[in-house]
Length: 119
Image 1 (tube, rainbow, N blue to C red):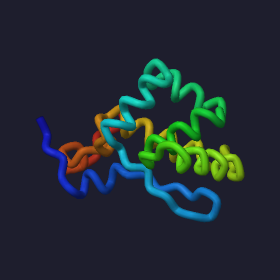
Image 2: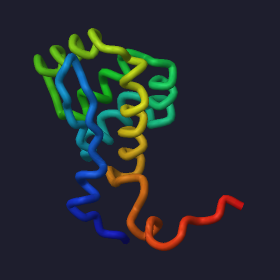
Image 3: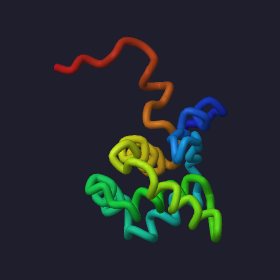
Image 4: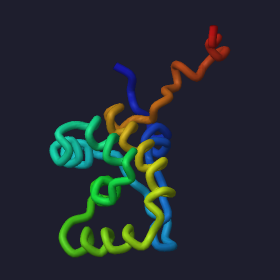
């Protein structure tokens, strides 16, 4: 099993701009569990994000920030004032990191040496 370094953890974070502020979504076990349970797996969540679903985008952001209660409600209001179109690509990348156990999608072993041939 490959070990996760501090650099990996930092590289697995996704920053987005919400209402003029940059926030960083952190992959965590809580985010993985919360989103998987809420959407009955990650495929439905990814499908909802692909449809630019506001609730899916908001739930992903709230889970990635670890917000609850009033803070979560306030974040939902902030998300509503932003372009979901601009948020979907980084949110999709974040969900893919969650699918990878919270680790970056490209590990060090695959990045060493020459790139594999596309043929």
